Length: 185
Image (cartoon, rainbow, N blue to C red; front, side, top):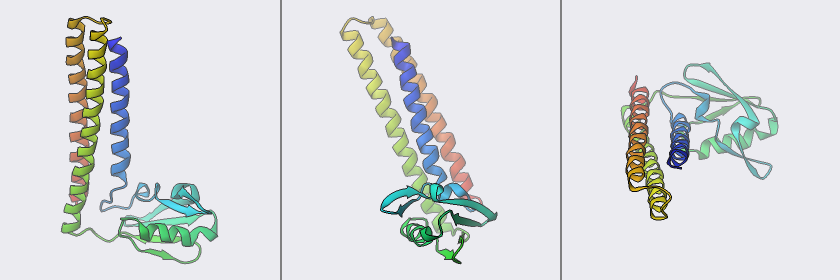
């Protein structure tokens, strides 16, 4: 029973880490990366659609992205979505493709991005703590209903704490890598 609960808990924690990873790929670094705009929501025929469903995104140069829409009529909507996003990029439209030139990051902008990374990692830490709290509560409920013994509860709590510590270390590793990537000139 506790093993099932721990597996479920681990699965939820993995999903939190994965969500953070996806979130951090959208934070701009010095290099062009298609993940920067892939999940950008574009208003396409009245419904929000992710950019990766509307166009191919390529990296022709280290500091440039090229977006080629499947439907030429969607160029204006894509441009509008890019301008409305917090990327701080200005699209160049030639009627067929949209080019995004990524300027070099200033020191001030790099520090802002690092703060954003810290904020997102802290949100992930809170999510992990909430998962741990819910699992602890479930274990205590099992013990109160006499489904597990007090010793099982104690060992389950220790295993849960080890699992949480493992994922907290993973968060720190991800944060350090992203900070290094952002601060790299």
